[in-house]
Structure formats: C-alpha cells, structure tokens
Image (cartoon, rainbow, N blue to C red; front, side, top):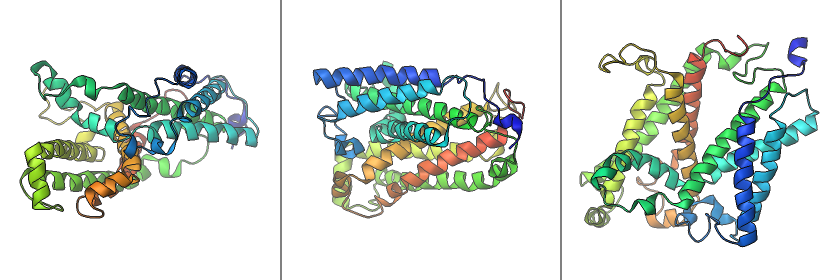
Length: 352
C-alpha cells in the first residue's frame, strides 16, 4: 500500500447522510411505538408473523429493540458521512460490525415472503387495477406491515452502501468502485466473467425447478403432491396463484441469463428503438439485486418456520426447489456483482 492510499480521505460520503436520516426517522417512530405501545407492525397485525424470523422476538420487546438499533445505527451512519482519517482497529471493527449487522437485519431478516410475493404479483396488480382484476382488496395487499418491511429493506441497502463506502475509504480505496493501488485479483473483468457464469446459471436453474412444479399443478399434474390436494387447489383457485409465481420465476430465470449473454449488454434487434444500444448497467444490476435480497429474506423465515413444514408435509418434490432458495438469492446477487465488475469501466471518481 502506497503513502497516497494511507493519506486521510477528504471525500464525504453521499449515501451516509441519507442512511442516517432514514434510520433516525424510523428510529423515532419505533421509539414512539415503545412509549405508546401502538403501531408496532410486526405483532398481531402481521399475518405472516409465523414465517418471519421476527416471530422469535417478543412483541413486548420489539419496538424498544428496533428503536435502539435504528437510532444507534443512525449515529454510526452519521459518523461515516464526513471525511475520515484512519481510525484505530478496534473502533473500525466496532463501527463496521454494528453497521453491517443492522444492515443485514433490515435488508434480510425483517422482510419475508410477503415482499417477494408482492414483487411477483406487482405487474398484474398494477396493470389490472383500472379494470378491477384480479378481484382483490388492495388495502389488504398494500398494508402498513408491508410498507414497513419494504422500507426496512430499502434502509438496509442504504446503510450497507454507506458502510461499504466508509470501509473502503478507511483503507485508502476508492469509495465508489473499491479499487486501490494493489492488484484486483478476482474482481477483474476476466475473472468476473468466469465465476459470474457459474453464478448466473445457478441462479437461473433454481427458479426454473420451482416453476416446473407450480406449472405442472396448473396443468393438472400432481407433481410431488396428492391428487386430492391438487383438486382442492384447483377448486379454490390457489393453483393459479402458484402458476403466476411460476411464470414470474421463469421470466426471472431468462433475465438472469442476460447477465452473461450478449443481449444482456446490448438490446436485441427485435427491440424497436433500442436495438443495438448498450444496456445501462443499473437497469440489470438494480432489479437483480432487489430480487436477490427478496428471495434470500423470504427463504430465511419460511424455511425455518414449523408451519411451513406442517403444511407441506416435510421433504418432497414440493419443498426441494424452495430449499434451494437461499442459494438462489446468493447466486443471483453474485451474478449481478459479476456483471457490474465486467461492465463498470473506469471509475469517474478515481480514474482507475
């Protein structure tokens, strides 16, 4: 490491103030909920509480715990907002440990399958709303609890970006791209192309396996379930909900392969008006990262819930694809990062 990289970093973080403001706002709301004992979104009003890891936190403790974590994380984010010298190792480890822990909790632990399901049905809900289809009460879909879970994920991402930037700046690397004066190793474009291909194919195969079971049920094939149970799902219409998620999974698998295919870098010829133009990096990375977080968050609470195993009857063809969901989330996140590494080019901030 050169003397230049050891010099204090005068650049201020652009994300940390946003993260600090978000954390402070929701921390104050949690504090109000602690005092008034009202408005806690993850208690009795959360119909998905049994498949959410927050079920392990007593409702009487939840608001105060959130208030403490959010407000202290706001202070940490604010400390990361200004120019930095190089803090002592214990202080750096303490701030990074707290920041990453809270960011993980907000982005992965607080959300659950409700966020993932809403993402899957969002296109149908938004397009069909003017026509009254599907016949659902939107007030039952877009609830206060869903808003809080979505906001937690957004806040977790903001905090993670702030912590990552500060982590890079404290070792003399560029806060924007992470590149320093040393070798880049596995983060080079050539290396990312190799391991990114494995990640992308893994992230495409897993949702396809899930979709096969759900589409088979819609076609009347009792794959992994009994004929009686399939008939019940057809009678109730539940099978079509599964088919919708299956179709969403197939579409996602195809788009995932775009992270390693030429048409994922330049729009294909059939896209009139865009054919041949370069695909903006954020257009591919942002949705892939969002889905990766939603899948990972949803799987953690679901697969650890006794209710899930009771309803599915234990290990079977029905549960096997869902057991792979954590791997799907990690693989998709890795594929998106590899895509970013391959296409990012020279950094506008540091020039590397």
